[in-house]
Image (cartoon, rainbow, N blue to C red; front, side, top):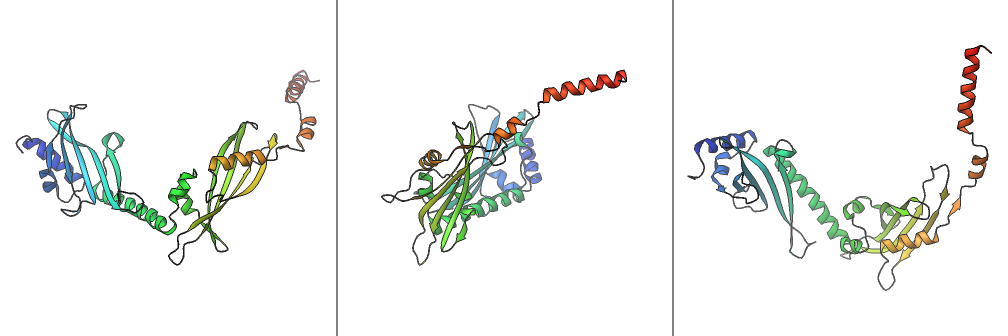
Length: 279
């Protein structure tokens, strides 16, 4: 490592110690010179396994940059976690996190390990739900992209599992947004049989808290036709078309008896003048 001076080696070693790495000398031995055409301040990189040698499931990548000629420092920390999965044709999923000094102090080594545990736990939850329900591909094709949130929303109704989600859509004829709620009715997996998305219940309504204006509501159940459910956009369009748009029955009464603020202001000004003149 003739390219790495003793002073630079000591600086990086001290920084690795401050970051809480338990093998700073071994980590420093993995350093290699690096040139980045887009950033001439990049001087070296270090790739290593923070757990056990030879285990490629978790990897850390450090970028060493030059602040000035006399000082080198760790500018970036990249975390990579690779896990087996049945949700991808490749059979693996790679999770990445990037930390830079521009975002704040780099995480300590124990914080990195906790981040690994969090990433793995979330991914294992997704994998478990996928194996249990195996509906992510179908729901994504139908326009429901928030699959993890849907799984967390599940409730039981009789012998069915219900996923719940609500979204806002613009209703141009009303000049406002309408809340559309979907309930996805799923037969739960049992006896090695996969779960089946059987029906979707859709409903929409305008905000009932609005004192004036138009209100609308509609409800409908959507079933599979030729083993296919309609896309979410189609369901929203059909709900919009069948919505009963009606005026608030009390709007005219409110309009007729609404107090004119300008008259109140004039009367207030007049009363103020009367008080000053002691009339």
